[in-house]
Image 1: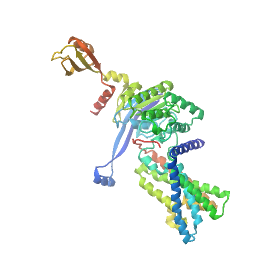
Image 2: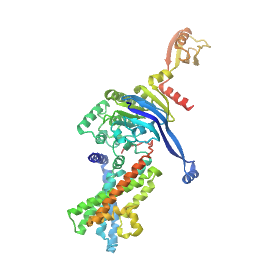
Image 3: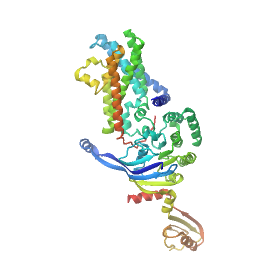
Image 4: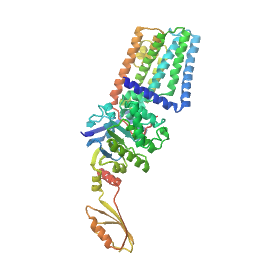
Length: 265
Length: 328
């Protein structure tokens, strides 16, 4: 465990060094993404200016929700940046590099790239959480701990979901369109109050498109401690993670490499 | 125990086939047509510890597929292989600590960063402690003459400089076997020679075994004592490079110039006249059919010699002839 952590830290440091080679581009993407998220939230500000709440969710709930989703999403796609391009790595035979080095292939592949814009999501998430605390008027150390745990669980489910979808590439070839659709679906559904959905839709959000584990569930847990929710987010994170690792390594046996000329960025 | 041992190794890929145009695409959508392509067909060979073994063949012969199986990147369809006692596709991580690999078309160095940053990352990947990593970097920097290049972003290095850094990176953890897949691809003559010298030097200094694939016969001729030639996934030749020369470099070409005019019907028994001029001739003969001595005596007897040049085909031409023979 310690060995892998030391390796991960070195990899993230190298990613950071690489990003710092183009500081202006890095900062532009960070600020750009923060603005993009802020503009998206303006919709909810306008909405709640007219309606006080929607199925029990108010503007502060939405700030908590955006805080958890953006921080978890930002951390996930910054630290494991290749989670959003695993499909092309597999389809184009670019996994050779990771397979030739003595490290777990999936971990190495995922952490080998950081998206600058994800740092913008992460920062925006922290601002949103800060605003949620300010407007709710309630804060204590335990809430901070719950926020960290909620973001970690959201990150684990999001990255695992992306790995699961893209691992299908080993069986059905290029899944970039499917990946894009799945990615949009999980991000979109995670940013709505869960109380809007019921029945089958809710079941889908806990299983097929596990947006509930990324948004509503951890956001509610951050706001107020609930043992059942704690168990649910921990179990959800662990189950999706194990499933993703299992499916990826089953697929890896079918990997066919490639002869494309490559560059390590 | 040999460093590499391969027995009846096979690898079959499923390739999707599609007729040209929209109609072909629609048909492939409805009923895809897959064809099995055998990239490696029952390869068996061994490489001794510390040996420099050439592994050559034309494009699509199965060289890279074999190397990818031996590094654990690909699973074979059938057969056995052991590299330093490890089954590559089953013990990939344990094996990777003991071998190094360089793929000419697949850089390991981070493009936007100086090579030294990748070296430090590799230090963590291979679990080297800081002080021994620093000593190793400085040793390799000197051996590969890359001291001045280490702090320059990789994107600003020439191909030759980059490739020396690539090979140095693959040697950071003192591997016992180095798998080099076309390391000299795209390099100019000087860069190739420098790369060959450093590989040879590391073999002598550290006893690292090298399995080298290359399209350049010069790489094989300079570095390897033994060569395996494959075509269509099968071994078509295996022996010492010197034996390859003895066996196939038997055709001599002679260019001769005289101080006086030659007879118009000038010829020698067992010698093919390529071109006959007034003061000189170009001819070819096979030493297995016609001994050298009567040819030289015949040339001397034909007139007063001004100049004689005897040449043999390059190793590249010989290898090309072997490929063509197997095609036939």
